[in-house]
Image 1 (spheres, rainbow, N blue to C red):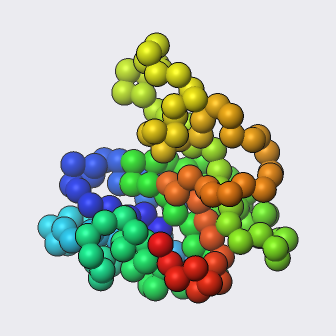
Image 2 (image 1 turned 90 degrees about the vertical axis):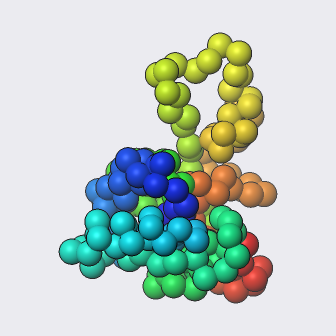
Length: 170
């Protein structure tokens, strides 16, 4: 699922969707949730009208990412729901890595590394790696590999549907 809210990220949105469509383990569906932006929703519907694997829906709740994700969860068809930010590009093995972790029935959520892509192509010298969490990315100090974590970074995460049923959504 990719929650979207502005046409200003049109190129980023297309890249995010393309990265999901190019997965080594195909997605059951790609769900785009437009957050109270009918112009963007209609543009996305036109863009993907010939691709039945991509569905575009309007956020049925109040404005914002949490409500958009809850709308997407209600619309999603899978037992595991994966989230990707609208300005992110997934590694081609993204869904494969997530799926492998769910072989363990105790696993309720899986996250992955998120690397910043700086506009200049280089990290600003004044911005230390410990602060990458500020821009929604993996930061220095996170434990590497498969470990138990308290929460995952939402822009590169997946959850069993039952986790939302238990928690009541976002």
